[in-house]
Length: 427
Image (cartoon, rainbow, N blue to C red; front, top):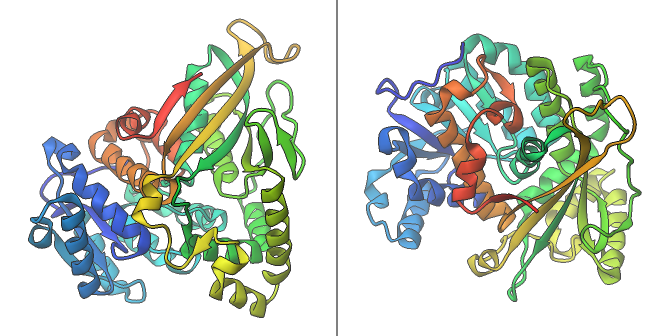
């Protein structure tokens, strides 16, 4: 049995590891905003990382941004380094939950998972790297179950909106939902927008290692998920989407992998009908397509070679046409940006046999929210942690390595996200 101990045996409900990183600084601010949502109306938390000086600076910055001068002195600073296992163990022993913001996870993630499992701390990350997420499930699921520890990956923009969006769509559907397609669109304000190059680096290494991901998946020995109803049709590599009124491409992130793992869990543990899933992203008009094709060809060529990967890492703005940058977005850019997932589902009405005939009902839902990488991601990550702290009986009975959908299917996470600006609705 898993246990979420919020008593005084551990000094902190939450420790943010990697708090001085680009994303970590915004997770700090989000935690500081919601301290009243902790167990019994209070949240005990600390920040951790390699440099005490940088952590102090992040707390100073958060104090100024939020108008909370007490953050400068009231929040404990813990020095811990992924290269020093003893320091990670000491950190994990003090936390109920570790929020791990240190990426790329393929290089720095496993020591944190290992330390959390060995020292009985739950762990949440914001990883969008399928290879890391699935290798942690393969290598640590049984140990986490034995220890009663929850390791929940992909709890940021990758992949809470998609994973919980599919579950929300199924809950709202009156009958048996059998297939969902999602279409992601993002908008920016007059200041434009960009993404910090940490995500760019993860993509570079992920594409370079795609062969290893295929061999990793064979080790699970999974049988294909059963197809209920009509088999979902895969779209082409580039097509005009009537759903979002622009050109679209298959979504290249972790969402399809994460959603499939959630559907497998819900089938095996709760005998729920698996939902087929297709993920796509809108890319705009013809001018954007030309840019994307040119950037894509350069990326696919360079990512195969060491010198090419070094060039991609050194000059993210050039090779991504400004989409990724070493500085990341400004606060003004973040304020003007937003995202929207449109989910188009089909299935069979109540009383209709899914094995007979074509689907006879449709549903459309939306998940929409603020800037994806550094506003929505901290909200999703922190609310996932708050859900674990406040709703332990709604979580899976056993510890393990879980997707958001597997961990939070029976919780009120969607309602919590609705209250914090990530809105789920039926159209």
